[in-house]
Every structure is written in structure tokens, then in C-alpha cells.
Amino acid sequence: LAKTTQPISMDSYEGQEVNITCSHNNIATNDYITWYQQFPSQGPRFIIQGYKTKVTNEVASLFIPADRKSSTLSLPRVSLSDTAVYYCLVGGNYGGSQGNLIFGKGTKLSVKP
Amino acid sequence: SAVISQKPSRDICQRGTSLTIQCQVDSQVTMMFWYRQQPGQSLTLIATANQGSEATYESGFVIDKFPISRPNLTFSTLTVSNMSPEDSSIYLCSVDNRGSYNEQFFGPGTRLTVL
Image (cartoon, rainbow over all chains, first blue to last red; front, side):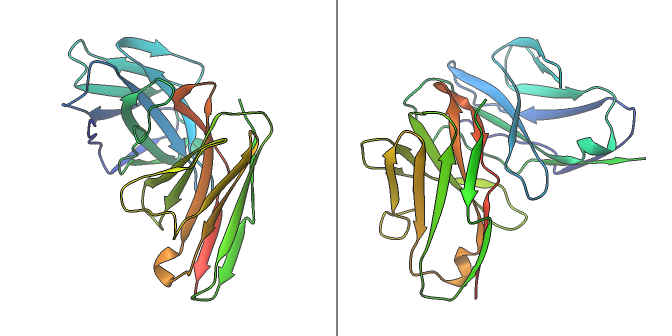
């Protein structure tokens, strides 16, 4: 199972773009990269998932270089409500796989006014 | 998406007792997952529960301590048995998004404090 490494914390200001990078040097061929967001006293919430290149949805963008050994979650124009812990996960995306969804320590993002 | 509810939302229990946590989903799902999140820490998968079969436990978790039931496709329970203060944690259940294992929907969690 691929281990992930993220910065423990990041600070930003409202309106800025935030990029959180995750390292996963041992990613396997069939592994996907998934990001979750967790607010205090809530369960994690799925943000975005990708396999390679770039994925964009209404919340964020995910950039994955060709070697897939890292990925970057990009949050455009953050607001105070984006203050949360962001988790990068790497694992298989097929039914029946067990134990692949392993949460690392996450990155605590603090957005200031 | 799936809407998940958990009961109780929080509880304070005495050492040596047991607590059963309920997880209800608003749609039928094959797999349900139980996690533990200790204060200020990340999530750790306890077990995966398939309807109609025994739950599969991760390393470090055993059925005698965390028995799980999965009576139908919308409901599961996790029991924390013979509790000690080390069991104080948030317990969360989740379901996957129609077989997309990495995309899971989480319940709000049950905050357990053991005295």
C-alpha cells in the first residue's frame, strides 16, 4: 500500500489559491489518488479523485504529473469556510478491495481574513 | 450521494461496559465501513461489513472487542465491548459510492468518552 506524505499544516488568506502537495512515491499502477476534506466534528467529505494528468470539478482541481509520485490539490480563491483538514489517499478503486482506504495525517489548512 | 445517520451522536460510558453504535443509510449499499478517529488524529479503518457475511477486520482490531452486525443493506451496528478509557474516540461509519471504493460517504460520527 502506497504511503502518503503531506505538510502537517498550511496557512492562507481569503481569496488566495491554495495548493497542497502530497507525495506517494510507491504508488501502484492501479492506484487512484483521492482527496477528502474534514471539518471539526464532522465526517470526511470526498473532494476529488484522479488517476493521471488533471481533474477539475466545482470544488477543486487535482494535478498529477506523469510519474504519479505526487499530486497537488488546488483550491481556488479560498474562503474562511475552507478551513479544514485535507487528506490525501492512494489506493485501488475497485469493488471488493479491503483495507485500501488508508488516511494519512492530513494537512490542516487555516484560512485567515 | 448517500445520507448516513448515526446513533448516538455522543455518549459517556463507564469502564467495563459496552456501547452499540447504529449506522443507517438512506439507500441500499453493499459495503459499509467502520472507522475510529482518536482526538486530533487521523482515521483508522476498523472493519468492512458486507451484508450477509462476517465482517473483515483490519490488523489490530478483533471481533470480540468490536462485534459488527449487518442485518440488511441499509443498516449496521458496531459494538465497543468492555470499554476502557483508551476506547475514547469518534467512531464513524461510511459507505462507498456504488462500488467506487475510494469515494466514500461518511456519517457524522459518534463521540465516545469512557471514564
